[in-house]
Amino acid sequence: MNTILPIGPGVWELRDHPGAKRSPTVRTVSLVKAIPSATHMALVELARRNLLHFVVSQNIDGIHLRSGLPSSLISEVHGNSNLEICKNCHTKYFRDFQTRTAIKDHDHQTTRKCTNCSSTLYDSIINFGESISPQEFDASFEHAEKADVCLVLGSSILVPPAAYVPQRVSERGGKLAIGNLQLTSSASLAQLNIHALCDDLMRGLMAKLDIPIPDWELHRRVRVIIQKQRIKIMGLDVDQDISYTLFSGVRIRVRQGTLSKYESKQLTGRESIEHKIPLNDSIGNMDVYIELHWQGNYNEPMYTLRTRLTDSIKDVHLFYNPKLRVWREQ
Ligand SMILES: [Zn+2]
Image: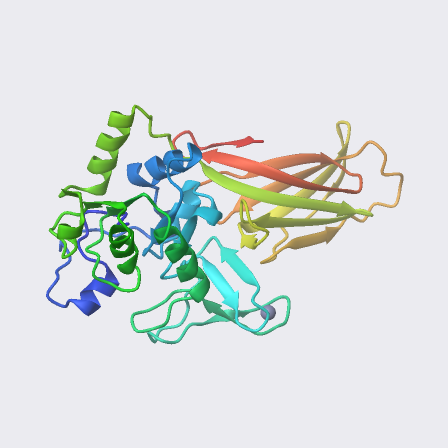
């Protein structure tokens, strides 16, 4: 899906078809600050209602995952600019910043190391001419083999291997609808060719289905582990146990009723932030206040988590409304 229309062809398509032109008037927004579009949110809602079963994305912006689409329902066949991987032990790391630090096209090493095995980490972006992860592509083809309908959104269906997915659905006798501004070379395979912007198309479709497009909230998962006054705080992907670097820093305060017992300095850490609270007296009836300071791509204000200072493991789901600039905890 081409998500930031109208920008014209994507990078892969430009390389494959140098005649294609990007609009000179387009202003690009940093990928980590991009707000999910009406199209992204329509897909999230269709997935919630079990009407949409899988998304094959050629985008590297990671917005589908940030929009709330479960990771089990998407293949990001060209990678995710927020995801780093260790090629040695296969640990994955999500970052709330662009992971790419390399300059040369086919160089994917980043400046960070794996906390599990100390190997060099790599960005997950697949550049033109590089092979696509078989796991990502297997999932796409599994769904191409069973989909009854395939809806193409903002793709010219020229760049293999993703282009084979709608072609395969059509071959099997499934219905194909193509939404793209220009006519595509697969037009004759489709029952429906719609030459419109993705957002206009999806708004029309959702109105026809009488399904409202939900507003976007940024969903974050934070794990707090307390053991013998040692506190570990980590961000996690919302539905996979993959570490997510969410915080610019954390500050811990301990109170007993209205009495302040301890206050840490600003603490930092990439995959997790750990701190031992240096209190010797009885820790009964104490509360911990954990100030979470974010990377702040959406101007998220600091959020304070409150919990008892007792041994526990707690996952907290936080939802941020970027229009109101408020968090709610669930
Ligand atoms: Zn590793």
